[in-house]
Length: 187
Image 1 (cartoon, rainbow, N blue to C red):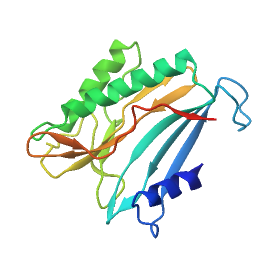
Image 2: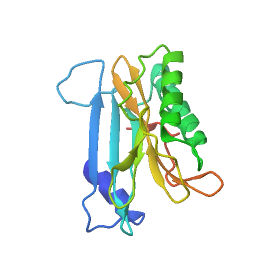
Image 3: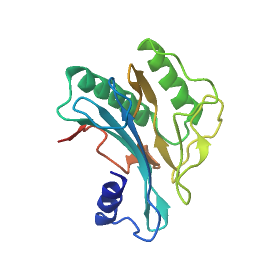
Image 4: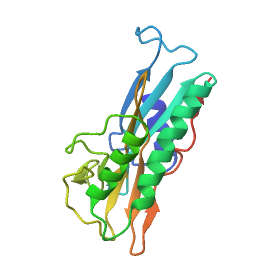
């Protein structure tokens, strides 16, 4: 899976000479033996380098056709990510995004994150850098900054994570990665 992600990234322009980092988590209600079965989910968090700059994104997929519950989980996670991205603009403190995400998690009946737990981070010459989108970081977003937005929601099979990379522009934001709205299906 990691090799296929790496090849797909290189095909669309990622630097083939830089290591492509990926972490995939197998989420299952059934056996925990590492064997993929229909109904399981896969969460992949990965980044690659393009012209010296890093990207960072996470995607979800099901093994076989998704269940109604998996579609609901994905939609809930995507809604939270989208709403957090919609807040991004110059002049906003990053802690305001984390505070919003926590309020939404509580509204869903989920446990809020601790103040130091982040729902995103800066990206650029490093895959993970400041600022840290948590409730304590006072960093004010400025045009030219890039951040990865990645709040998590919890399900009975574990935490689900979707992540997109966002550029802060003079008037708002530009989403640099897309695709989190798609729940992948591995057949």
